[in-house]
Amino acid sequence: MNAPLVLSLFPGIGLLDMAFEEAGFCVVRGPDLLWGGDVRRFHPPAGRFDGVIGGPPCQFASELSRWNAHLGIPLAENLIPEFERIVSGARPAWFAMENVVQAPAPVVDGYTIEGSVIRDVWCGGETMRQRRMSIGSREGLRIRIITEALHRPDPHLAITSCAREDRHGRPKHLIAGKRRVCGNRGDRLPIDEMARRQGLPPHFFGDASPFTVQAQRKMIGNGVPLAMGRAVATAVCRSIGFEPQPVLIPEAAE
Image (cartoon, rainbow, N blue to C red):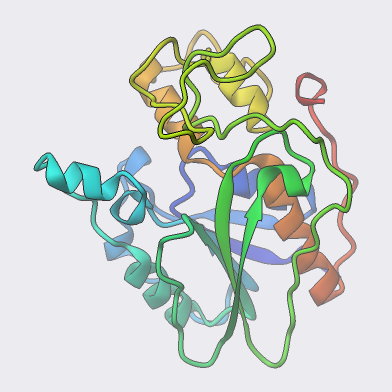
């Protein structure tokens, strides 16, 4: 079987893409605002792509959206309809969309869509990062994400929630009794540690990166943890009968 061709929407720095590339898929990245592109002007050819993956910006549906609205901060545009439009036009055999739990599930005519909420630690990762995966398929294809039966009992908080931690890696600040850290309190995690907890090599950006420290934090935080992406890619491989390639995990992320 030839390498399946996958279209990646809203790729960002490509964490979800990496997981599918590791498994042997050929990933083509669509336009992204980060690189000067506009997905609203993108019209893919029909029948060229085997699958479509991506995570539309989640700020409009995140837990902070209500707080931002209260403060008068403009909310980000809901681009899930653009994801739906492109899938409808490309007509792939399957698609996988990730987003925050509160975001609406995509609806595309002709596709059976199943949603599941998974955590990074359930997939072999290090954090409690939680995302909703919406898997759409045609022609009776069933794609089921299988999480690991055993995982670490002391996962870190999601990197977007972490601020100051003690020497045991526990948060020093708690809000309303919940294990959640306000991003405006204390010292944030170093960028290298943020990258490592997402499954990336610590020096992912390198000294020659053109991005500011703030931009690097945002890009890493917006990405799907690599372990979670691998679980999705493995589920797709199993369903379409594609033998995945051996996964090469960076030494720094072990």
